[in-house]
Length: 291
Image 1 (cartoon, one colour):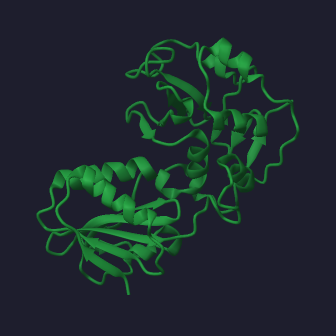
Image 2: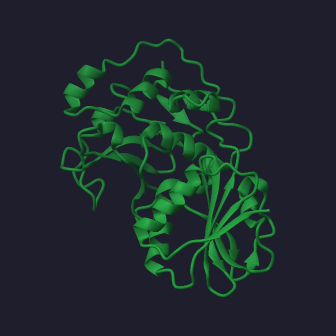
């Protein structure tokens, strides 16, 4: 049976912390259901939904207006439906690392949070201490070619800023090229030159500023689908820069509070992130543009 508990009314921050603690500590064979009081502040639920969006991207709707999607499979979060019969009104689902997380309502109006375990696609067959770069290699079957590494000290001096460590590691291992034909790395002094792209017009990311303006965007990836991939610079540690993605100028920028390596792994494997490569069933690829 699933584990069920009722939680006291929460502030937005408190509710997010509570769910995070349950997710981090969840090691059950059955889903855990957290039933929220009927008078839970709607702002708290909205804050939790926004936080889940930052962690895991766009949700998948498993239930809407009392109708449960009959096509939901184990790979798309069916475990979240297990604790319910006909009392579920709505449920949005996210795939987050080794867990499914659901947020919705049951008959009577009470909010519910559901947490279930799932195989983590980014960890399959790898030791826990594996880096994101090692996971990218495992996902794509890539073997480093032994190409010379980039002179990062010179690049960073020319650019005028340090760069995230995981980006430098990924470039040194993969070199120039693209993942799943969807996202191409910008690599210094290549055809897709990170430095040259950083010197494009100042209004290219409108309404957000471009690097080197304070907190300006610095693009690290491009796409034949005209998707833009950037960091929001600022702060002392470039490895803490969030990733921003704009798929359409009319919808604006989506923010992901993770490093480049984690973003790439999740974008390739997690349906909740909302990127086409996550739906691939025949594996993932890296196509080199080197030489």
